Image (cartoon, rainbow, N blue to C red; front, side, top):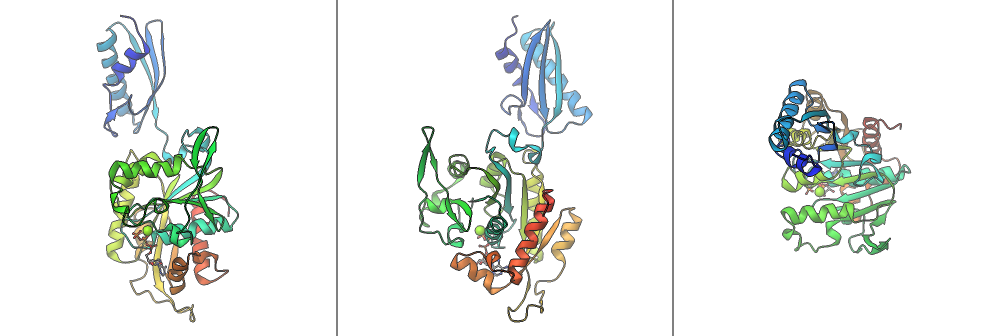
Length: 355
Ligand SMILES: Nc1ncnc2c1ncn2[C@@H]1O[C@H](COP(=O)(O)OP(=O)(O)OP(=O)(O)O)[C@@H](O)[C@H]1O
Ligand SMILES: [Mg+2]
């Protein structure tokens, strides 16, 4: 039988990647297919390159190629490990190659201050002189527009090389997009499942972000479906997990960590931020009251072998800054600005960036 590229692909589409539970052709794991002197050669990426896994995959490929094409052919599969998300360097990415570091801000539980951390992270990085973008991926309660005082803005579009792009809204040196710009609050409910994912991926792919040092993504709370698809589709460099000190919030941190370590997601967790760690009256900044207990998040981070990125106090001006639309990190060298900057610096260190 004649060996064609299509036949090889057809045969290999019967081989299932054991971790990702889909065939290796639709997962796009096979490349450089060649046929010469009776031998089919190709490269194959798998998620777990342990010896016995490699062997099993080689055998499965050989079995199906011989079955479909003929028993006389020889098969040489060059099996290697799939790059982890953070090893997918921008120059190798086809999606979003102009964004150097894409960092998701996540939490297991709602209301812990994820958007507040995301907004301050983005504004703080811009303040340090980096080129920064921010995507509000919270389809249920987009809050970035309000936190940057741009709720009334409508992103315009611009045409580049005949293709139309969304132009991000900008304030405090941060370029941002949010589903909130495209829907009214009562519309937000209709964004579900695949539609939501599509709309979200468009905020990344169909917008003119230009070159960015950092893209911060404010994820919706929890670990739902929209979440999973998004973190699989966007080439994230890492995730920062936010929690409050309560035991109940810390339990949910484990769920978030579990999601990022799934083989098909495989995003490194850069560390844990403890928000509302302690209360401090603005006029007595040296008095720290650990109302929800002290040290819980730090201990958890240690037990789970992740970085502890720092604590953010519970202070009225952080809430007020969010409400008036000017992130607290921009308040000179106040206690709150220092706390956010400390978290940012620790995250940069986790990314091996000099601070
Ligand atoms: N450290 C803090 N000090 C004072 N107020 C805070 C602090 N962090 C967050 N807040 C306030 O708590 C409320 C919830 O914060 P935020 O919206 O950032 O949480 P979230 O985790 O994004 O919530 P959701 O799950 O709904 O998206 C907001 O009013 C915010 O201003
Ligand atoms: Mg939020």
